[in-house]
Amino acid sequence: MNNTSSSNSQPICLKWWFWIFILLLSGTITTTSFGAITTLFAPVEPEFITRLLQQFSADILWRKRLPYKLSRPINILVMGIDQVPGLTEDSPNVFEGRSDTLLLVRANPTNKTVSLLSIPRDTKVQIPGIGLAKINEANLYGGPKLVKNVLKYTLNNIEVDRYVRVSKEAFQELVEQLGGIEVFIPEPMFYIDNTQQLKIDLQAGWQTLNGEQAEQFARFREEVYGDIGRVQRQQVLLKALQSRLTNMAVLTRWPQIIRVMHKYVDTNLSFQEMLALISFSLDLERDHLKMVMLPGKPSSRNEYFASYWIIEQAGRDRILEQYFDVKLDKFKYDKKYQKYNNEILPLENKIAVQNASSYPQAATKFAQYLRDKGFYNVYVVPNWSDQQHLTQVIVQKGYLKSAEVVQNTLGFGHIEPTSTGEIGSDLTIRLGEDSINQIHLLQKNEVEAKVD
Image 1: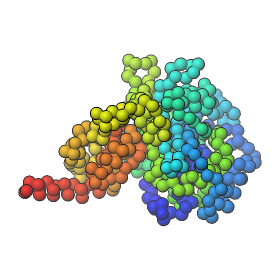
Image 2: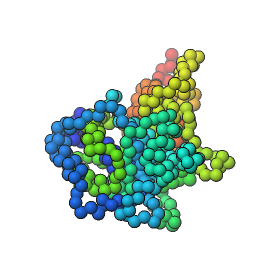
Image 3: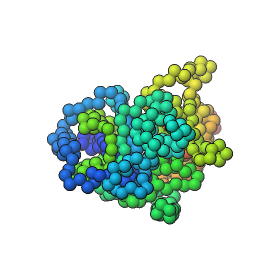
Image 4: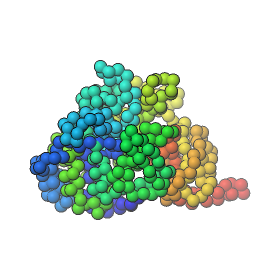
């Protein structure tokens, strides 16, 4: 994956703001299928695009600040809409299908962070007037208003301020405009579905994917992890998009990208709100984007007629409190265990240790090291197939505080606030080449301890 320079050395126009802008404006969060809308055929460029490009030329490209500020936290619902059968590309109803991807994004100017919650499309919810259903059906039955109400009921009265819906082809188009994105594919992906006219054939290893291939990577649905594996790959693609969008070579393509992407968007964000979001993102640091998946488990075959993602209530409450500032009265402090009743102490976390270094026994060594330090729920998982330089502490289920404790215990490693680790874990430690020096130190200390 392409490396980018630090935020201090980058030109201000190459910071995360553009990636966040694309996220909010065009919803290009690896939605697995989109459609086109009437404006695709508009002979005249909308006034909105002209005004936006004027702002870029006058303010952004000359490194000046925009005259709009984000004054309070804002929650934005981002939906990628599946293709509606029987509709032509110019139909005004192409946004009325199921939401194939659903994200809740919180931009918080108070602590200068962006939190992104991935909500599996199979999540079990109650839809007013419908009953028990999957959350991806809410947009089909009642559009953004109904989705907002369902989320509010499901996620402890959280408020959704704005929405962005995107239709087919947006993600493919963005990737093409960027000249492809670089993604690591851990194992070969092959799948044929004649009913959907879908053929996926991707080789393992680092690949530069074009638009169609990137969509295939997002759509692949393996038997073991199903929709949850897709959520992980969506977050992988997000990282790849971020890396590409902060590349200097993309700078000259911005006007064309903006002109193309507006065609696929339905949103109630105002022009001023979009510029305020851009202004907010100017100072957003790379590590201040936190991505997490809604905690839960797949339903068993005997529970329901359909397969659902069953929300884990304690995990949901913890995520909403830590990532979305939702304060719940039922969080009671347990004096005996010195914690809130929705928390797990760091020593209790399920920690998967995975070797991504050239040292064969690295995972075994550090798993035992953590056990010796009191972490009793540690296990080793199969090696990661791509060697990496730096060790990651992947916050699989949103336990940021626990990740800091583990990082301090190890004495090295970078906290990765995404859900791209071993699915069954709370935290995944993916050991890079930097762990080898630490292993030598451990061995030296063991020898000295025996001598003493």
